[in-house]
Image 1 (cartoon, rainbow, N blue to C red):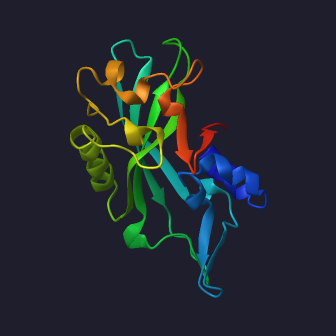
Image 2: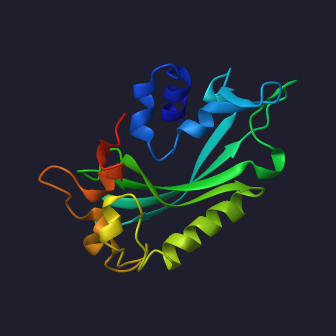
Length: 193
């Protein structure tokens, strides 16, 4: 929610969009303008039209790593010309990687973009379909335009060795893990903010 609001408030700053190159947060900061046939920045805070729910968290054995499934609901805003989302397509589902150093620390989250669900009419169906993909279809896949294009996923979420051996959790370099980076046009952008 904070990242969506950040985009909404900083829409004039083109550099602010670069760290969300996978369009994980930015699309929720805009409404469609029927009069001008274009997307415009949302005129109200994200908390008034967006609901984000953590649906499922799968932890590793020590509770320091997790894979998180979230559902997004975009409430329809009554307006003469602005559309936030059509009511029959207002549910999405997305995944995050979560990590912490100690069991008492809060979890730091990183968007994970292999699969995403957009435009569903039902919350549970959206999350269920996303979970199905990660629990059953991730193994053997790659992620184009990223570090994972040359490193296929050898485990599904939920496999016994997922957190220990998945390419997602392997070091990228001396200070970074793969889940912290994506690639676009051969440029490296850390997920931050």
